Each structure stands twice: as structure tokens, then as C-alpha cells.
Length: 83
Image (cartoon, rainbow, N blue to C red):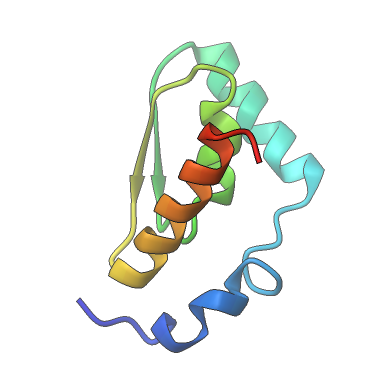
């Protein structure tokens, strides 16, 4: 499925998806407190999903852009390899 953001996906992390540490902390604390899986709807390149998953919380990440999800996959592989 094509998304209007597909042409700018390589710039997404640097501009549109800049979550502050406070925002990430809020969601990490919320999911930890609830001790349940969470859904990241419109996950984009996965910045928030990856941070939440690092605390061993199951995350269901959903986006309608295949390009965003492929970038998410690249991030996940780099994290898994420890880069």
C-alpha cells in the first residue's frame, strides 16, 4: 500500500518521528505498569515500539506504509545485532 510519506521515509526519523525522552518514558512506564502487551498504531519506523520492546513488553506495531515497516525492520536488525 502506498503512503504519502513513502518518498521521505529516510528522513522520517530525523524530523517527523522525533519522540522526546519524556514521551518515550511515559509510554514505557505505562506499559510496564499495566504489564500487558501494547499496540503501536501508526508505528512508522518503529522508534517507540523498539524502546518499549527493550523492556521485554510485547508490542504489536502496525503501519499502512510498507516502506516505513521495512525501515522498522532495518532498525530492529541493527538493535538485535547490538549496533
